[in-house]
Length: 312
Ligand SMILES: [Mn+2]
Image 1 (cartoon, rainbow, N blue to C red):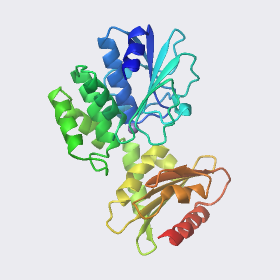
Image 2: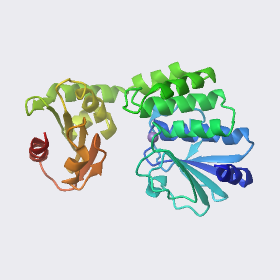
Image 3: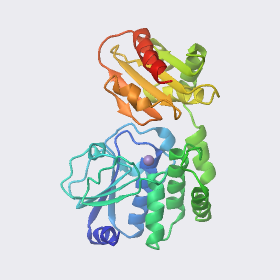
């Protein structure tokens, strides 16, 4: 860890990197690191390859500083929450520090600080700051709380324990604007997403003795609501709260009539195993796949259900 601090101390221009299609943790951890580097009077930039970052993350400190071009003068980069080198969205010529919490992280950088047991990358950063006696200010605390809140699914994740709450308490004592985070991350929703949720819940069916919730969404429905792919997650996640539901599946038509599949599962069925039958992947609890042919939603739905039937 002292190597990481030395590296930061001797660098002239540092770039923090949030991964492609960033989530709250990736933006929050980059924000906390960005704030820390500013405190140290470092020249610092913030890079993310994705152009349209969800507006609901705009409350995170320094969000307006994010750029989609990588500065040529950088001599050190720090990637946050990037499980794989491809998630950086840029080919680097400078040295790299990799700070993350994904189990699949293969330590791709020159310097790696990866804690797979941590709930979020912001928790990894919190440990980093504490162990190095670095003062946590209000902006850093707010960002770190936001990452823990989102990656722990509002403290509902299996990994949440007393330590999580002790960390949160300390972040609040450091000035974390937790009410703001709760509102933006847990409650803020676009009108399009809300409309789509209504459409999806209305047409949801329950299969295999109501153990599987099924959603089929046509391109027409997507266009009618103005929603995007990520907005489908609202109804999908919510169906998992039905006590008898063990698996939820979504098959969605893209505008070019190809298909995107998403699977959520509790412990019994391995979602990534189902997705792998279609060339996809992910985690046991959440996985996805893409089908690049023109096939009917019904056809894919039946295939997925048949596979689940064998596992359930
Ligand atoms: Mn994360």
